[in-house]
Length: 356
Image (cartoon, rainbow, N blue to C red; front, side, top):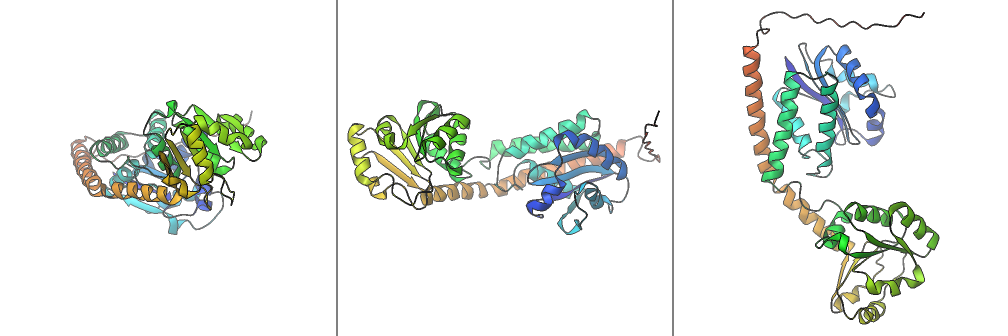
C-alpha cells in the first residue's frame, strides 16, 4: 500500500493556475469518486482552498500516474507537471502535518487551514472515501497540530498590519471601546470588518463623502459621521484610525491639542494607516496621546513573525516524532493484516442510466 500527497500550492503555481484547479465544495465528493476510479485509488481526500489544491490517497499501484489526475479537472488544457509536487510515504505524512499546522501557509502559523483540512477530511470520511490509512493519517495531523499550538507560539503574534492595529486596540476589551475610522475606501472597509469580527461594537465612520461613509456603515456595521463634525465626535472616542487616500494632513497637532483639552486629557490612541500620513506626527509629543504609523505597525508585525520563526525548530521536532510514530503504526498494522499476502483484485463498475 502506497501513501501519497500530490498537488499545487501558492509556492508552486500562480493564482491564474490555482483558479483553474479550484473545486467547488458542492463538487468535491463527485470529483473525488472520479479521481479514485481513474487513479485506481483505495482511499482519497481532496482538498481545495484559495492557496492549494491537493489529493491525499493510497494506491496499490505505482504512483507515476498520480500527477496526471490533476489534469482531469483543469479548466484549460496545459502542462501542469512543472507545478505539481508529489510526496510518498514519510514525505507525504510530513507534508500533511506541515500544511495542517500552518507551516506551509502564506502567513506562517495561520490557523484557518486547520479548519479547512478538517472539513475536507470529514467530507471524504462521510462519503466513505477514506479507510484505515487516511483515517490514521488525518487524525495524526490534527494531534500534531494541537501539540504544536500547545507547546509553541507559532499561531500567536500579529500576522498583518490590520491585525497588528487591532491587537494594539484590543489590549482592553474591544466591545467596551469607541473607535472612529477616517475613510471609506478598501483599507477603511477592511479595518471596519476586522474590528467588527474581533468584537468592536461602537464604530464611527467619517469620510469627506458622507454617502460613502453611510454606505460603509450600513454594510459593515457602525455609525456614519459628517466629516466636518468628526473632531467634535472624537471627544468621546478611545481610538482614531486614519485610513484614507488623502495626501493632506487631516489631523494637525493643533487640532489634537485642542481635542485633548476638550477630552480633559483623557488618553487617545491614534493609528495612521495612510501614506502620506494623515495625522501630524508632532502630536505624539502631547501628553496622553499615542500615535502609531504604518512603519511602526510593520515593525511590530515583523517582530511577531520573527517570534513565530524561532518556534520552527520545535515544530519540526514535533512533526518528526509524529511522522515516526505513524509510520511505525501503519507498518505494524500492515504486517498483521490477514490480507497482506493475499492478492486482491478491485473492480469498479460505472453504471450509466439507459434512456427510457
